[in-house]
Length: 470
Image 1 (cartoon, rainbow, N blue to C red):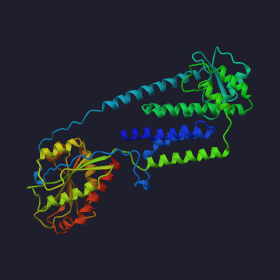
Image 2: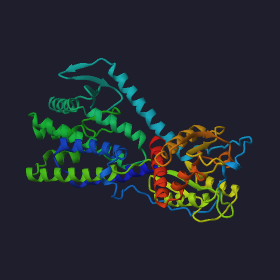
Image 3: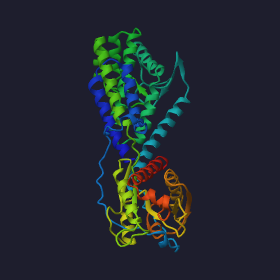
Image 4: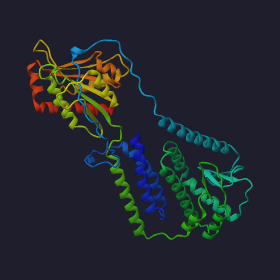
């Protein structure tokens, strides 16, 4: 989520810079409106749309993560399984920064709803219909403004005939082009992304563009431009308007007068600007949408045994090779942390302490099984059904187990057991038995270097599936 918030600041900043440099002074008001609303929506949605074609291109949102030095730890075999009473694991409390964010967002949302309620009450007043507009006289605002087809006029403000016609034409444009929808959308986005300075700039620019468009269309309807300019000056000294409305005298007088009298650029220049803006926006969208911004799945891969604890025959070396192959597959989406990279031994407590320090989303303990009957074969997995992570452990274990059926003929199922490691870690855990080393066919698979790479790849594919479902 933090990555997503960082991305919105970067992408909206780039998009706003494009608007500010290329479009702000152009009289392409309809296109400007499309750009402002379209770009803000694209920048907020793009991270959730992944374009596989560009997976080789580095994302502007990538934040390098310092790799934690890999330590060496030992994993117990099934013979070390105990069924002692479960020790409950307490998860950390909610981040106080998140609580502050919710409080501020809640404040903005309450203010938004309060303003909506205020407008609703005003719309209950008696009104006079003038063409498509419903004129309502108000006492708590000094400005002429509109909300959809409702037009609010100060009760004690006398308008001359020219002023009245100018205001009426102006607010009719706001109503016809549904500018209120833009305002409501931006207010809602402000409630969520209040920390992003570009949301506030987008809102200001959108409101300004609304006024420019309404001025232009009002004058083109036949109103004298000088009389209209005088109306802007006469009514432009007010400070308060009804919230969430479009206001005739809301935007600075100077900007509107300059834009009103400014000549349009040549068709070639306007077309060139629009094409440039479209290409730049498309580039921002592509560079942001190809990479998934979900939080990375942090997985601790624990190669069982090690050192003087060899496990079953060559077990410690087999699972170490697979673990090392998995570490090579570590990516921005799935971050692999291994408990050992060479043949060393560590106590169970040290191993648990290391795992808990990683704040992992999943722990996978790798082993190779053994049985007195050489015909016994296949893969199986274990999880602890007595802890709060039991549901996730069960779901993850099932996925990892099914992904191994390409290499082993028998699926011995997902079983429950209360192992030391899974009673003390603060994350879901799966104990994965990769075949029987005492079985001839399984042994061939486990001892083959290419097969070990393929097994590691299949485990990683299972982790990708887990991340998508998590």
